[in-house]
Length: 345
Image (cartoon, rainbow, N blue to C red):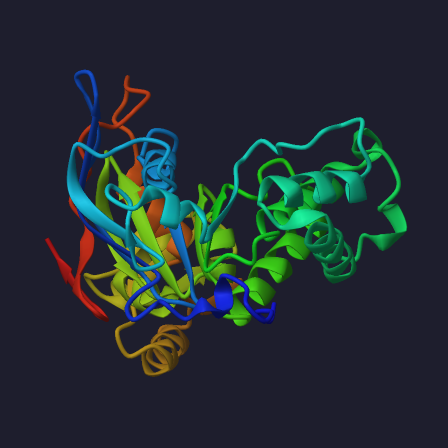
């Protein structure tokens, strides 16, 4: 999306990150929702805040959009302090919550025009933005149909269009693809990429590691109100661990499994008819395993190199102890200490 002349996006008042959060703390009674959260979102980037229900994702967004105040910490959004300049923050952001806030009786065009007036665009400005967004989102064919007749994917696209009416510097998306079919989800992802490509900073919350991996420049994993892990998808992939060589045997006969384990050495682990060994040298280790199996005359069903996935890392970090539905303390795990830096804590 290209900023129009005189729009908020064209105001050029961002000299630092579009979002900068330091030491954000929030409690609701005895429940500590956020525990000194730090966060940076550059202009034109997508940062995905990933976490299970109760991790603190929506609380973070509610604070940054000035709906609630933090107990401690400081946050700047579009260069303005959320505590002392909330009106300036609101004038520069767009928000799409998980539940679409659309009038089901009005048409798509009427919803956009109405919300445009609420954003103080004036009648002519609201009409212009409505037409621009209907074309951008590929919805001109359904513009004059009641929203109540729209599919879930169409309603989500219209809700995103509403959030972009004021041409915001910062866009907040709260689990934007929950409940969408795969095609609608992919369409929504492309819209998010296009928005960020036009210079808007996007902060997106999700529970879906696939979504975060597909969209994010940076992924932030929250659990128990704390940042457990932060980094680019490639950095987090590296943090997930070393590659492994996976050997699948034709059957799980004890003598065959035992012979394979002895051939591959003490680092081999066995699960049924699958034997795995660490592969710090990746392809070189794969070739070495194949050669050992050949020398010992062991026939296999399959052998290949596999890498730990971000989904596995996320599941490990955010796993809940048995008998509890919500974590209040995070598990130890990798955490970014500086830009591009990862270490075990």
